Image 1 (cartoon, rainbow, N blue to C red):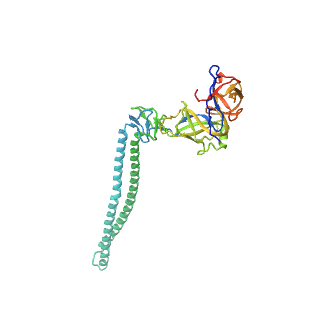
Image 2 (cartoon, rainbow, N blue to C red):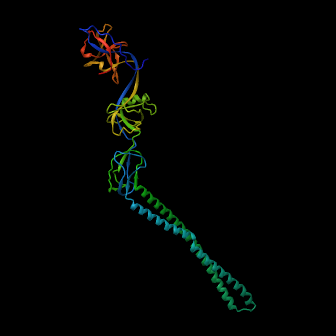
Image 3 (cartoon, rainbow, N blue to C red):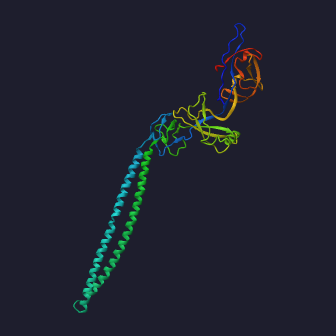
Length: 409
Protein backbone atom coordinates (compact mmCIF):
# COMPACT_ATOMS: atom_id res chain seq x y z
CA UNK A 1 0.00 0.00 0.00
CA UNK A 2 1.31 3.46 -0.88
CA UNK A 3 2.08 6.00 1.80
CA UNK A 4 0.02 9.16 2.13
CA UNK A 5 0.40 11.33 -0.94
CA UNK A 6 -1.39 12.84 -3.92
CA UNK A 7 0.18 12.88 -7.36
CA UNK A 8 -0.80 15.28 -10.12
CA UNK A 9 -1.40 14.31 -13.73
CA UNK A 10 1.07 15.34 -16.41
CA UNK A 11 0.20 18.69 -17.99
CA UNK A 12 -2.21 18.33 -20.89
CA UNK A 13 -1.99 20.41 -24.02
CA UNK A 14 -4.16 23.53 -24.15
CA UNK A 15 -6.86 23.99 -26.75
CA UNK A 16 -6.50 26.29 -29.76
CA UNK A 17 -6.12 29.99 -29.15
CA UNK A 18 -9.39 31.85 -29.18
CA UNK A 19 -12.15 29.88 -27.44
CA UNK A 20 -9.73 27.91 -25.22
CA UNK A 21 -11.44 25.98 -22.39
CA UNK A 22 -10.75 27.33 -18.91
CA UNK A 23 -7.72 25.96 -17.11
CA UNK A 24 -8.25 24.03 -13.87
CA UNK A 25 -5.74 22.39 -11.57
CA UNK A 26 -6.43 18.80 -10.63
CA UNK A 27 -5.09 15.89 -8.62
CA UNK A 28 -5.46 12.19 -9.28
CA UNK A 29 -6.86 10.38 -6.28
CA UNK A 30 -4.83 7.41 -5.03
CA UNK A 31 -5.40 5.00 -2.18
CA UNK A 32 -2.92 5.47 0.65
CA UNK A 33 -2.36 4.64 4.30
CA UNK A 34 -3.46 7.80 6.08
CA UNK A 35 -2.45 8.42 9.70
CA UNK A 36 -5.28 10.02 11.66
CA UNK A 37 -3.98 12.88 13.77
CA UNK A 38 -5.93 14.34 16.68
CA UNK A 39 -5.36 17.74 18.25
CA UNK A 40 -6.08 19.00 21.75
CA UNK A 41 -5.72 22.44 23.24
CA UNK A 42 -2.78 22.48 25.61
CA UNK A 43 -0.82 24.72 27.93
CA UNK A 44 2.77 24.50 29.12
CA UNK A 45 3.71 24.56 32.78
CA UNK A 46 6.70 23.95 35.04
CA UNK A 47 5.99 20.83 37.05
CA UNK A 48 8.77 21.22 39.60
CA UNK A 49 8.63 24.97 40.17
CA UNK A 50 10.20 26.01 43.47
CA UNK A 51 9.44 28.92 45.77
CA UNK A 52 12.60 30.52 47.14
CA UNK A 53 12.26 31.39 50.84
CA UNK A 54 14.61 32.59 53.57
CA UNK A 55 15.50 30.24 56.42
CA UNK A 56 16.71 32.94 58.78
CA UNK A 57 15.48 36.42 59.54
CA UNK A 58 17.53 39.34 58.34
CA UNK A 59 17.72 42.39 56.12
CA UNK A 60 18.69 42.01 52.46
CA UNK A 61 22.11 43.55 51.85
CA UNK A 62 22.70 42.35 48.27
CA UNK A 63 20.40 41.23 45.46
CA UNK A 64 22.41 39.00 43.13
CA UNK A 65 20.16 38.22 40.14
CA UNK A 66 17.93 39.82 37.53
CA UNK A 67 14.30 38.77 36.91
CA UNK A 68 14.02 36.42 33.95
CA UNK A 69 17.62 35.28 34.31
CA UNK A 70 18.74 31.67 33.95
CA UNK A 71 20.12 30.46 37.26
CA UNK A 72 21.86 27.24 38.27
CA UNK A 73 21.41 25.15 41.41
CA UNK A 74 23.48 26.59 44.24
CA UNK A 75 23.84 30.04 42.68
CA UNK A 76 23.66 32.86 45.30
CA UNK A 77 20.49 34.94 44.94
CA UNK A 78 20.37 37.13 48.07
CA UNK A 79 22.87 38.04 50.76
CA UNK A 80 21.52 39.15 54.12
CA UNK A 81 23.27 41.32 56.71
CA UNK A 82 25.62 38.67 58.10
CA UNK A 83 26.94 40.56 61.14
CA UNK A 84 24.32 39.33 63.63
CA UNK A 85 24.77 35.78 62.36
CA UNK A 86 28.56 35.98 62.64
CA UNK A 87 28.21 37.30 66.21
CA UNK A 88 25.96 34.37 67.07
CA UNK A 89 28.64 31.97 65.79
CA UNK A 90 31.31 33.66 67.93
CA UNK A 91 29.09 33.46 71.03
CA UNK A 92 28.41 29.78 70.42
CA UNK A 93 32.12 29.09 69.95
CA UNK A 94 32.96 30.84 73.25
CA UNK A 95 30.32 28.94 75.17
CA UNK A 96 31.57 25.68 73.74
CA UNK A 97 35.19 26.37 74.66
CA UNK A 98 34.18 27.24 78.25
CA UNK A 99 32.17 24.05 78.55
CA UNK A 100 34.99 21.96 77.10
CA UNK A 101 37.34 23.44 79.71
CA UNK A 102 34.88 22.52 82.47
CA UNK A 103 34.71 19.00 81.09
CA UNK A 104 38.48 18.71 81.01
CA UNK A 105 38.68 19.87 84.64
CA UNK A 106 35.98 17.41 85.66
CA UNK A 107 37.79 14.54 83.95
CA UNK A 108 40.95 15.30 85.96
CA UNK A 109 38.93 14.44 89.13
CA UNK A 110 40.84 16.82 91.44
CA UNK A 111 38.28 16.58 94.26
CA UNK A 112 38.33 12.81 94.11
CA UNK A 113 42.11 12.75 94.33
CA UNK A 114 41.99 14.97 97.40
CA UNK A 115 39.41 12.70 99.06
CA UNK A 116 41.50 9.62 98.25
CA UNK A 117 44.55 11.32 99.77
CA UNK A 118 42.60 12.06 102.95
CA UNK A 119 41.55 8.42 103.06
CA UNK A 120 45.16 7.31 102.74
CA UNK A 121 46.21 9.57 105.65
CA UNK A 122 43.37 8.22 107.80
CA UNK A 123 44.35 4.64 106.97
CA UNK A 124 47.97 5.37 107.92
CA UNK A 125 46.90 6.88 111.26
CA UNK A 126 44.69 3.85 111.88
CA UNK A 127 47.61 1.53 111.24
CA UNK A 128 49.80 3.45 113.73
CA UNK A 129 47.04 3.38 116.35
CA UNK A 130 46.72 -0.41 116.01
CA UNK A 131 50.45 -0.81 116.34
CA UNK A 132 50.44 1.32 119.51
CA UNK A 133 47.67 -0.81 121.06
CA UNK A 134 49.42 -4.02 120.08
CA UNK A 135 52.69 -2.73 121.59
CA UNK A 136 51.24 -1.46 124.86
CA UNK A 137 48.92 -4.38 125.64
CA UNK A 138 51.69 -6.93 126.65
CA UNK A 139 53.64 -4.24 128.48
CA UNK A 140 50.60 -3.33 130.58
CA UNK A 141 49.97 -7.01 131.36
CA UNK A 142 53.58 -7.25 132.63
CA UNK A 143 53.23 -3.94 134.53
CA UNK A 144 55.94 -2.55 132.31
CA UNK A 145 53.78 0.33 131.08
CA UNK A 146 50.99 2.36 132.65
CA UNK A 147 47.41 1.17 131.86
CA UNK A 148 46.46 4.77 131.09
CA UNK A 149 48.72 4.74 128.03
CA UNK A 150 46.91 1.60 126.77
CA UNK A 151 43.55 3.21 127.29
CA UNK A 152 44.69 6.31 125.42
CA UNK A 153 45.99 4.19 122.57
CA UNK A 154 42.75 2.20 122.46
CA UNK A 155 40.69 5.42 122.24
CA UNK A 156 42.95 6.71 119.50
CA UNK A 157 42.43 3.44 117.58
CA UNK A 158 38.67 3.82 117.73
CA UNK A 159 38.92 7.44 116.60
CA UNK A 160 41.12 6.51 113.64
CA UNK A 161 38.78 3.70 112.61
CA UNK A 162 35.93 6.23 112.53
CA UNK A 163 38.12 8.65 110.57
CA UNK A 164 38.86 5.94 107.97
CA UNK A 165 35.18 5.13 107.59
CA UNK A 166 34.37 8.84 107.14
CA UNK A 167 37.19 9.27 104.62
CA UNK A 168 35.92 6.22 102.66
CA UNK A 169 32.41 7.71 102.56
CA UNK A 170 33.90 10.99 101.34
CA UNK A 171 35.76 9.16 98.57
CA UNK A 172 32.62 7.32 97.43
CA UNK A 173 30.54 10.48 97.49
CA UNK A 174 33.18 12.52 95.65
CA UNK A 175 33.55 9.76 93.04
CA UNK A 176 29.80 9.79 92.41
CA UNK A 177 29.71 13.58 92.24
CA UNK A 178 32.66 13.64 89.84
CA UNK A 179 31.06 11.09 87.49
CA UNK A 180 27.81 13.01 87.56
CA UNK A 181 29.66 16.25 86.82
CA UNK A 182 31.53 14.65 83.93
CA UNK A 183 28.34 13.33 82.35
CA UNK A 184 26.50 16.60 82.91
CA UNK A 185 29.33 18.65 81.44
CA UNK A 186 29.64 16.20 78.54
CA UNK A 187 25.95 16.69 77.78
CA UNK A 188 26.37 20.45 77.95
CA UNK A 189 29.32 20.25 75.57
CA UNK A 190 27.23 18.25 73.05
CA UNK A 191 24.36 20.74 73.35
CA UNK A 192 26.73 23.66 72.79
CA UNK A 193 28.26 21.90 69.80
CA UNK A 194 24.74 21.62 68.39
CA UNK A 195 24.14 25.29 69.12
CA UNK A 196 27.38 26.16 67.31
CA UNK A 197 26.37 24.05 64.30
CA UNK A 198 22.98 25.76 64.26
CA UNK A 199 24.66 29.17 64.34
CA UNK A 200 27.01 28.12 61.52
CA UNK A 201 24.06 26.88 59.46
CA UNK A 202 22.21 30.14 60.05
CA UNK A 203 25.29 31.98 58.84
CA UNK A 204 25.28 29.81 55.69
CA UNK A 205 21.56 30.47 55.27
CA UNK A 206 22.38 34.17 55.35
CA UNK A 207 23.35 33.69 51.70
CA UNK A 208 20.16 32.48 50.02
CA UNK A 209 20.96 30.18 47.08
CA UNK A 210 18.94 28.72 44.21
CA UNK A 211 17.70 25.23 45.19
CA UNK A 212 17.32 24.23 41.51
CA UNK A 213 18.27 25.54 38.09
CA UNK A 214 15.77 27.30 35.87
CA UNK A 215 14.24 30.64 34.96
CA UNK A 216 13.90 32.96 37.94
CA UNK A 217 11.07 35.40 38.48
CA UNK A 218 10.94 38.86 40.03
CA UNK A 219 11.85 39.53 43.65
CA UNK A 220 9.29 40.42 46.28
CA UNK A 221 11.90 41.79 48.72
CA UNK A 222 14.37 44.41 47.58
CA UNK A 223 17.66 45.53 49.15
CA UNK A 224 16.99 46.72 52.69
CA UNK A 225 13.83 44.65 53.00
CA UNK A 226 13.27 42.21 55.84
CA UNK A 227 13.34 38.48 55.13
CA UNK A 228 11.06 36.53 57.44
CA UNK A 229 11.05 32.70 57.29
CA UNK A 230 7.39 32.70 58.40
CA UNK A 231 6.26 34.95 55.56
CA UNK A 232 3.47 33.58 53.37
CA UNK A 233 5.00 35.23 50.29
CA UNK A 234 8.15 33.68 48.77
CA UNK A 235 11.13 35.84 47.88
CA UNK A 236 10.93 34.68 44.25
CA UNK A 237 10.19 31.55 42.22
CA UNK A 238 12.27 29.38 39.90
CA UNK A 239 10.70 27.57 36.97
CA UNK A 240 12.68 24.62 35.53
CA UNK A 241 12.42 24.67 31.74
CA UNK A 242 13.96 21.40 30.58
CA UNK A 243 11.91 19.37 30.28
CA UNK A 244 8.84 21.57 29.85
CA UNK A 245 5.55 20.01 30.85
CA UNK A 246 2.28 20.27 28.95
CA UNK A 247 -1.24 19.54 30.15
CA UNK A 248 -4.25 18.85 27.96
CA UNK A 249 -7.69 17.33 28.52
CA UNK A 250 -9.54 14.36 27.08
CA UNK A 251 -13.26 13.81 27.19
CA UNK A 252 -14.47 10.83 29.15
CA UNK A 253 -15.28 8.95 25.91
CA UNK A 254 -11.83 9.70 24.47
CA UNK A 255 -10.22 8.56 27.69
CA UNK A 256 -12.02 5.21 27.51
CA UNK A 257 -11.10 4.77 23.85
CA UNK A 258 -7.45 5.60 24.41
CA UNK A 259 -7.25 3.41 27.51
CA UNK A 260 -8.58 0.40 25.65
CA UNK A 261 -6.09 1.07 22.88
CA UNK A 262 -3.19 1.38 25.32
CA UNK A 263 -2.47 4.93 24.20
CA UNK A 264 -2.27 6.34 27.74
CA UNK A 265 0.30 3.91 29.11
CA UNK A 266 3.60 5.77 29.73
CA UNK A 267 6.30 4.39 27.47
CA UNK A 268 3.76 2.95 25.02
CA UNK A 269 2.07 6.13 23.84
CA UNK A 270 2.67 7.55 20.36
CA UNK A 271 5.07 10.50 20.16
CA UNK A 272 3.42 13.89 20.54
CA UNK A 273 3.85 17.08 18.54
CA UNK A 274 3.42 20.47 20.17
CA UNK A 275 2.02 23.09 17.81
CA UNK A 276 2.72 26.59 19.10
CA UNK A 277 0.64 29.75 18.87
CA UNK A 278 2.39 30.83 15.65
CA UNK A 279 1.56 27.42 14.09
CA UNK A 280 5.20 26.34 14.27
CA UNK A 281 5.95 22.90 15.68
CA UNK A 282 8.28 22.38 18.60
CA UNK A 283 11.33 20.52 17.22
CA UNK A 284 11.32 17.86 19.93
CA UNK A 285 8.76 15.09 20.31
CA UNK A 286 6.91 14.70 23.58
CA UNK A 287 5.59 11.72 25.53
CA UNK A 288 2.62 11.20 27.82
CA UNK A 289 3.90 10.75 31.37
CA UNK A 290 0.72 10.37 33.38
CA UNK A 291 -2.91 11.36 33.78
CA UNK A 292 -4.77 12.57 36.84
CA UNK A 293 -6.71 10.12 38.96
CA UNK A 294 -10.23 11.46 38.44
CA UNK A 295 -12.49 12.91 35.77
CA UNK A 296 -13.50 16.50 36.48
CA UNK A 297 -17.24 16.29 37.16
CA UNK A 298 -17.75 19.91 36.06
CA UNK A 299 -16.31 19.44 32.56
CA UNK A 300 -16.36 15.66 32.10
CA UNK A 301 -12.69 15.74 31.12
CA UNK A 302 -9.50 14.10 32.36
CA UNK A 303 -6.21 15.98 32.50
CA UNK A 304 -3.26 14.30 30.78
CA UNK A 305 0.31 15.46 31.36
CA UNK A 306 3.21 15.15 28.93
CA UNK A 307 6.82 16.28 28.85
CA UNK A 308 8.91 17.75 26.03
CA UNK A 309 12.64 18.28 25.84
CA UNK A 310 13.39 22.00 25.90
CA UNK A 311 17.20 22.33 25.84
CA UNK A 312 17.18 25.82 24.32
CA UNK A 313 14.60 27.01 26.88
CA UNK A 314 12.56 28.63 24.13
CA UNK A 315 9.31 27.37 25.66
CA UNK A 316 8.08 29.10 28.81
CA UNK A 317 5.43 28.04 31.34
CA UNK A 318 1.94 29.34 30.57
CA UNK A 319 2.17 29.22 26.75
CA UNK A 320 -0.85 27.92 24.83
CA UNK A 321 -0.69 25.55 21.91
CA UNK A 322 -2.03 22.26 20.59
CA UNK A 323 -0.99 18.68 21.22
CA UNK A 324 -1.12 16.57 18.09
CA UNK A 325 -0.56 12.83 17.86
CA UNK A 326 -1.61 9.86 15.77
CA UNK A 327 -4.68 8.07 17.05
CA UNK A 328 -5.41 5.74 14.11
CA UNK A 329 -4.18 4.57 10.71
CA UNK A 330 -6.67 4.41 7.85
CA UNK A 331 -5.41 1.85 5.35
CA UNK A 332 -6.27 2.34 1.69
CA UNK A 333 -8.01 5.66 2.30
CA UNK A 334 -8.77 8.27 -0.36
CA UNK A 335 -7.93 11.85 0.58
CA UNK A 336 -8.30 15.16 -1.25
CA UNK A 337 -7.36 18.72 -0.28
CA UNK A 338 -10.00 20.41 1.83
CA UNK A 339 -10.22 23.24 -0.70
CA UNK A 340 -11.55 20.73 -3.29
CA UNK A 341 -14.70 20.04 -1.23
CA UNK A 342 -17.80 22.07 -2.13
CA UNK A 343 -20.33 22.31 0.67
CA UNK A 344 -23.88 23.60 0.26
CA UNK A 345 -25.86 23.30 3.48
CA UNK A 346 -25.47 19.63 4.46
CA UNK A 347 -24.39 18.42 1.03
CA UNK A 348 -20.75 17.89 0.08
CA UNK A 349 -19.50 17.44 -3.46
CA UNK A 350 -16.44 17.69 -5.68
CA UNK A 351 -15.86 18.46 -9.35
CA UNK A 352 -14.08 15.76 -11.31
CA UNK A 353 -12.69 15.84 -14.85
CA UNK A 354 -13.84 12.95 -17.03
CA UNK A 355 -11.91 11.28 -19.87
CA UNK A 356 -13.42 13.85 -22.27
CA UNK A 357 -12.12 16.72 -20.05
CA UNK A 358 -15.66 17.66 -19.06
CA UNK A 359 -16.61 18.66 -15.51
CA UNK A 360 -18.71 16.25 -13.52
CA UNK A 361 -20.22 16.90 -10.08
CA UNK A 362 -19.84 14.09 -7.55
CA UNK A 363 -21.64 13.93 -4.21
CA UNK A 364 -19.23 12.72 -1.56
CA UNK A 365 -19.23 11.76 2.09
CA UNK A 366 -16.20 12.88 4.08
CA UNK A 367 -14.58 11.49 7.20
CA UNK A 368 -11.68 12.76 9.29
CA UNK A 369 -9.58 15.77 8.44
CA UNK A 370 -5.84 15.13 8.26
CA UNK A 371 -3.91 18.37 8.09
CA UNK A 372 -4.99 20.03 4.82
CA UNK A 373 -6.57 16.84 3.52
CA UNK A 374 -10.03 15.42 3.93
CA UNK A 375 -10.66 11.67 3.81
CA UNK A 376 -13.48 10.80 1.40
CA UNK A 377 -15.55 7.84 2.59
CA UNK A 378 -17.94 7.64 -0.40
CA UNK A 379 -18.24 9.14 -3.90
CA UNK A 380 -14.69 8.73 -5.26
CA UNK A 381 -12.50 5.88 -6.44
CA UNK A 382 -8.80 5.60 -7.19
CA UNK A 383 -7.86 7.29 -10.46
CA UNK A 384 -10.55 10.00 -10.32
CA UNK A 385 -9.29 13.44 -11.31
CA UNK A 386 -10.53 16.02 -8.81
CA UNK A 387 -10.52 19.76 -9.43
CA UNK A 388 -8.64 21.70 -6.72
CA UNK A 389 -8.15 25.14 -8.28
CA UNK A 390 -10.53 26.95 -10.68
CA UNK A 391 -13.75 25.73 -9.09
CA UNK A 392 -15.47 29.11 -9.45
CA UNK A 393 -14.80 29.39 -13.18
CA UNK A 394 -16.45 26.10 -14.23
CA UNK A 395 -19.72 24.26 -13.93
CA UNK A 396 -20.86 20.67 -14.58
CA UNK A 397 -20.68 19.75 -18.31
CA UNK A 398 -18.08 22.44 -19.12
CA UNK A 399 -14.98 21.43 -21.06
CA UNK A 400 -11.74 22.36 -19.30
CA UNK A 401 -8.02 22.17 -19.73
CA UNK A 402 -6.65 20.20 -16.74
CA UNK A 403 -3.23 20.92 -15.30
CA UNK A 404 -1.39 19.43 -12.33
CA UNK A 405 -2.18 21.10 -9.01
CA UNK A 406 0.89 22.96 -7.83
CA UNK A 407 -0.24 23.25 -4.24
CA UNK A 408 0.07 27.04 -4.38
CA UNK A 409 -2.89 29.18 -3.27
